Amino acid sequence: GSKGVLPKIQIRFDANISKDLKWKFDAPSEEVLVEPGVQKIIYYTAKNLSKETTIGTASFNVSPPKAGAIFMKVDCFCFEEQLLKPGEKIKMSVAFYIDPKIYEQKNTKDIKEITLSYTFFKVNLESDNKNA
Image 1 (cartoon, one colour):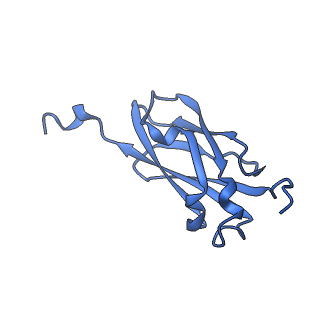
Image 2: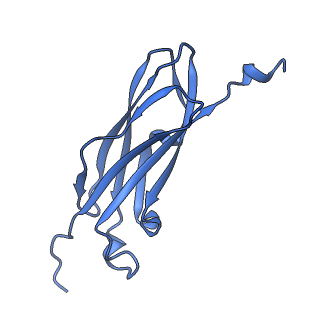
């Protein structure tokens, strides 16, 4: 087979937040085209809209689900809890690449677009329930 440049995959970004977390959470507005095997870094932003220091943790989801096997996170804000002081805004990075094996496996080779979605949940602080 001729080893040409692998077709690029369109990546979209999505941001969700649970009702009990008073944050503003934004995904990158621009979609990106990525070449499999080439690492890409994108940034989500979060801002604490409440008057309390709050901790959030993000869960992550890829669609279509079969893309999960070839979507490789190198580094992600979802690996650790995020602590935001009142009014604080942070930029959070995700470093990822698409496994070049995407085009070798028959169930993934037709994928042209992947949506990366995060949902932030509130983490209850230990001190809240010590005296409960």
